[in-house]
Image 1 (tube, rainbow, N blue to C red):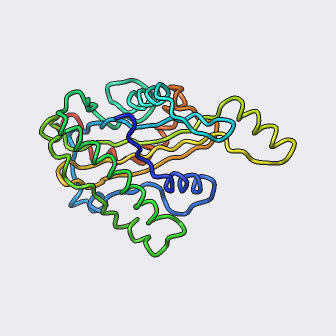
Image 2 (image 1 turned 180 degrees about the vertical axis):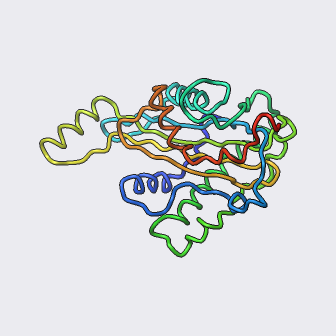
Image 3 (image 1 turned 45 degrees about the horizontal axis):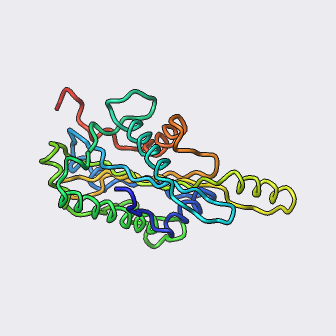
Length: 253
């Protein structure tokens, strides 16, 4: 699904505003049914939906250009970090991955539409619960966002209950821009941004379309999702508060 732009610019800015400031509102969001033990869904199988991460190279003049090879490498690292079938120190949160090659053209279209919808819903929910938007903070306690039940066909196709969505973006400066930033800071006391990264995760119940869990994690220059270990550590931060308790143990499945 390369080329599908998932992160609105304004919410990408918001992440880094939050990352650079002290915030009092938790970034993790749990659907209100999870907070009510009588309504908490029990999931047997969770599938990882196609990861969509764009990595851009930022030139000396501030021009961004996506490098598809870098994006693909980051996506591969993220999949490896999240799947139960792989080894690693990151919390495993998905049992299998969806391959778009297994889907019909109509199914792929529906999936892309819902991934794009997730981006918009995530932006709205983060805006609503941000520190500067206190009138909407009740949404943090009664989180009830949904992307609709249009992905229900995956429940039957893969015999799974829910899907994990991961979208993100990273900017990497060229060596020339990095050198200019260092000189600008030393000689002029001028700040030139050289890089940033963000990942957003969401767990969608295929039966209802409810977002059972959502969180995001942001970082400044220095992170490189193309690096296996750095990417794994970044993903681990994203899923720190993942509701692993709603997944039934293997013995109960």
